[in-house]
Length: 71
Length: 250
Image 1 (spheres, each protein chain N blue to C red):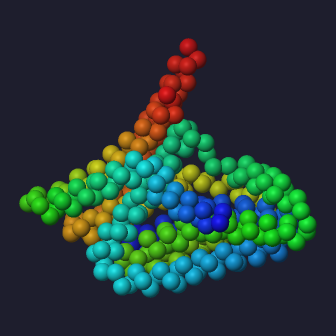
Image 2 (image 1 turned 30 degrees about the vertical axis):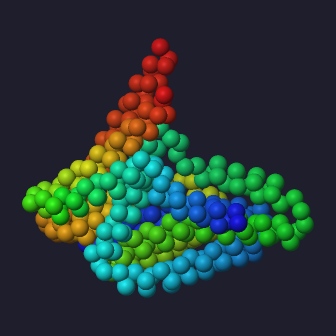
C-alpha cells in the first residue's frame, strides 16, 4: 500500500509541484482557446500572447517562491 | 535541429537526470546487500514500466491527433515549466542543488535501520528499495518519452534517447562504482525544462489551431526565449538573494 501511495504521490508531484502555476497554465490555455474560437484576432498574434503568457507564468512562479522563502 | 533530434535529445537529457537518481539508490542496495536483490528489484520495476508503455502506447493511436497534441502539449507545459522553475530556483541558490552523495548516505542509513531482521527479509527490503526507486524515477522517463514522442509520431527517437541515457549511466556507473555526483544535474534539468516547455507551447498551439509562422523553426525560437528568460530570471533572483543576505548582515 505504501508503494501505491508513493507512486500516486510521485504522479501528483509531477504535475502539482506548484499548484498555482498549474492552474495558471490551464487558465492561459483556456483563454487562448476562447480567443481563437470567439474572436477574429490573428491566430499568430494569439500564439504570441500564449508564448508570452507561459514566460510570465514561470517568472512569476520563481519570484513568488523566492519571496515566500525570504518572508 | 529537426523534430526527431529534438525529441531524442530532450528524452536523453531528461532520462539521464532520472536514471542517475535511480542509479544512486540501486548502487546503495548493490553495495550494501549485494547485486542480486539490486538487479531483481531493477528488473521487476523495468518490467512494470514496459507494461505501462505496452498498455498505454497503442491507446494513444486511437486519440485524434489534434486532441492528443492539446492534451500532451498541456502536460508538457505543466511538466516542462515545473522543471524550468525548479532549475531556475536551484541556479539562483534559492533551493539546494540535488546532492547524489547526500542521497546515497541517507538511503544507506535508511536501508540499514530498515533491515534489522533476518537475512532473507533484508534482501527483500533491499530489492524493494531498488524496485521503488527505478519505478518512481522511471515513471517520469516513461511520461517524457510518451509526451515528447506521441505528438508527431516520434516515439522511436524519444525511446532511443531514453535507452541511450540508461546505457550511458549504467556504463559510467559500472566504471566509477560510486554515486554520479559530478553529473551537472541542474544544467540538464534547465535544458530539459526549456525543451519541454518549447514543445508544450508548440503542440498546444498547433492542436488549438495556431499555424506557427516558420513552422518547425519556431521550436528553436521558443527554446531560445525560454532559455534567455530562465537565465535572466535566475540572475535576477541571485542578485535578490545576495542583496537580502547583505541586508540581513547590516
